[in-house]
Length: 244
Image (cartoon, rainbow, N blue to C red; front, top):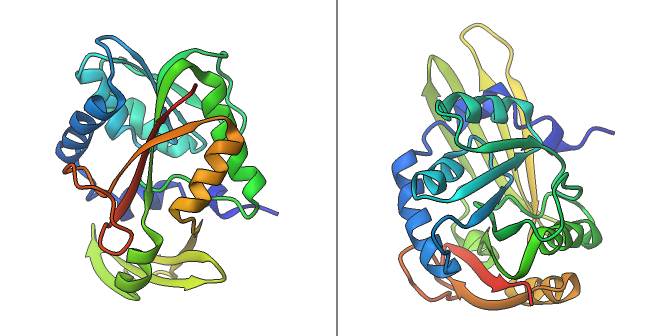
């Protein structure tokens, strides 16, 4: 059975998420550098790098970056944007990284690129792989949605047009997952349907999973403007910690 994440990160994803901009990535990377205490020239893994906005921003800031993603389409776009070939791009499942033990000073996993699997043990494999490729004392940042905020502020449906195509997104919370059904329709054509499904985890869940994976949580931020995490009002839950 094909999983949703094997189908949903193709050509239409580039259209649906084209509004994500490089300038925002630079702001977020500026905060990450401070939180991760990155030394000049540190080696950073962008795990689930997508189109590579943050990988490229980290490279421009002077770091040696490897971007890993499962999607061939998104990696092709990342390589196109990386016109100077500064980033090392790798295609892989985040549970099985083709990378050396202790290779990186930091691992980042951004914008809810976590919770893709049904079983907790599979999510923990991702964290264990992050630990494996980190040097002792290496740091991690995991940026996830805040489930409580999402439950209250979820927009059930939105519609727009882009490049002449109609994009309809329907969102719901069901059985412990936040679900998004996406339909992209060209004029006179049949809709192309995609699903995104993220398993919802609260802070206590992350504490448990990180501990099981051998990682130590140190700080939690509510956004990239230095606000402390508040379970009721923070849009995001940005976890920062270390491999002991």
